[in-house]
Length: 149
Image (cartoon, rainbow, N blue to C red; front, side, top):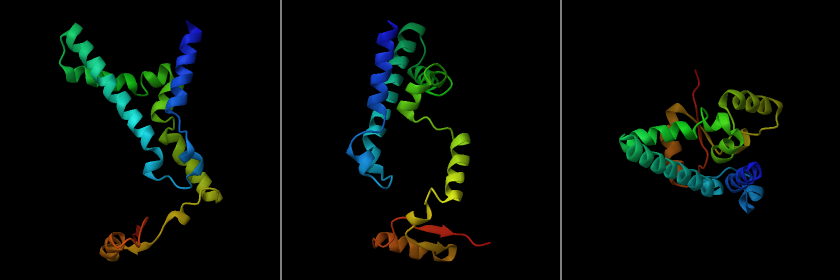
């Protein structure tokens, strides 16, 4: 039984992890690169909400929405993340902002995370209208509003 469980978790991790040609070919994190991952996450959430909501309604006499809230707790870091952190991380991502932000800041300060190269244009707060116009004209892909104080 343990082998079956391990194989199931391993298979689900493989399905939900980033894979395919877009992962290796993408040099940016465009939304289309990970859309399949998003829709699989959405399917897991909807399925879990429907199933747990139905169970709560059928066997516990609770409204559907109560079961859906319980499904949210089950899928989140407080239960699934505690019992099966690899599976929870594979489905929904395993990075904690408390850990990730200092790591990313360190990489940026070391010059290993090149965020400045991703910025197309910089605009002063007073020029925000020009930024929108440039976006509509296709001249601006990743503009940043800089607030000087």
